[in-house]
Length: 71
Image (cartoon, rainbow, N blue to C red; front, top):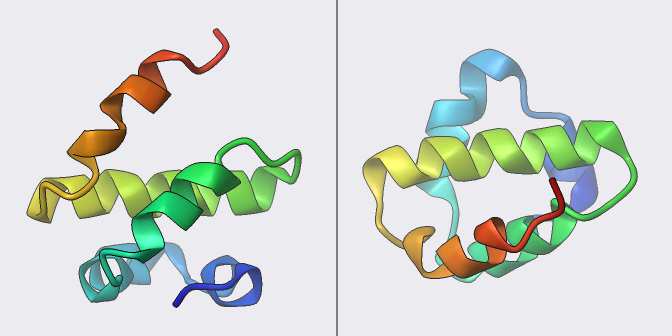
């Protein structure tokens, strides 16, 4: 299970590896964190989801959520 402290500590060079190690149940939490006001958390969650989507299709079910995001 991911937590805020662990995702903020992931370096850019480790994003790909970390995204592969995520549990499928971590995806909804990361999607929720995209709406937080803290830019650091939001950006890390985005990078993890983006990288995860390259390797796995478990981010795709949240497509409707991404489409509803404010522009």
